[in-house]
Length: 452
Image (tube, rainbow, N blue to C red; front, side, top):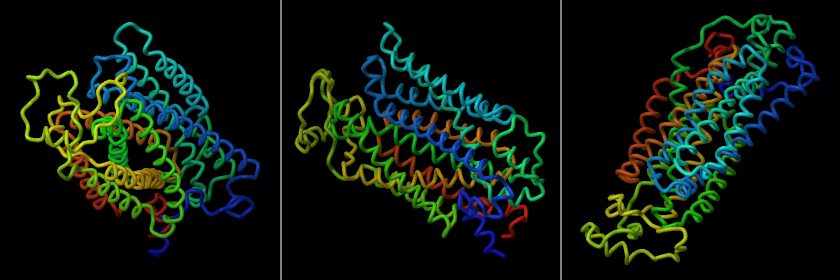
């Protein structure tokens, strides 16, 4: 009996049924199958383009902010990045609820128009004569509000790719009723859903896990540009280029991970992969801690001679660092001496940073997709729009707090304290996963449709 529960946990997202099979015919016709997958592919493309736009912008926000408003500092950068997620957190439950009672194309269309208008505003934030950083803050918030449509997209894909579980839990429902649920009716009144309460503890725990996972990656992508500019004396232009290449490589790595996870989940299950991903993330941030006796190049420009603090590391910094060729139009490079930790915190070597990035690039997508998959299975065949809205809101809250947390801690105490605290958070998250491990099971397993 236990093997049945394992099989349910390891069930592929798309199920085992194929068009023409007996199980498939219970649910939908060939025509509906093609229509449904055409919709799924369009939504995948929508999410892809949204993610590409986000990735393009995230690496250039800090240099762009410095260029349009000289009064902006690193702590304000955290708020600008967080404003995107604040807008998404507000919009996600709204769009999710909207999609439960109206056709999904309505919130999707409105959100896309909001995103286009907000991106146009972002492109012209340098035009006003003053307060440019606040215009950027508003623009990013509105872009995030438009991105709240991810709740609608996730709820549709989750409903459309859970046919196997719906087949078992809706066996007494007509094919028309099943299709009405999957394709998103204007009202759910005519659809009969199986009885049984959702495990709210598992739902809350999964939201917390998802929050931490998004929190960790949000702070990582936020700090990449300031960190590399401080540690390696990269100019703004170099930081945008090199960090963009690094994140692009992590994106390719994530695609490979996603492909491998589908095969691995059949053997070990989603919960084990989630646990393994968190361990890999912890190792990545542990490696990122500063070690050794080499220090970053100090940014001495604009300091008065009598304002240079006394330190025993000043000469060491200058002698050990190979001063790169600087473009003076780009401004001073190196770790600003206003950040006192620059004088006594060892540098993070480039090989150390790249190794950490690779490990985080393995752990994050693994945790992300597994937490989302478990969440969808825990909810079962009932409408998931509102629940997916709360999951997206949880991720948005993480993207709000992550950038603010890392920008404040990094500026005040440096990377050693910042990444040590992150390691502690991951350890607590692993502990939480261990506590609720046995409760993170599919709805059908919990209610005995498949016995564990």
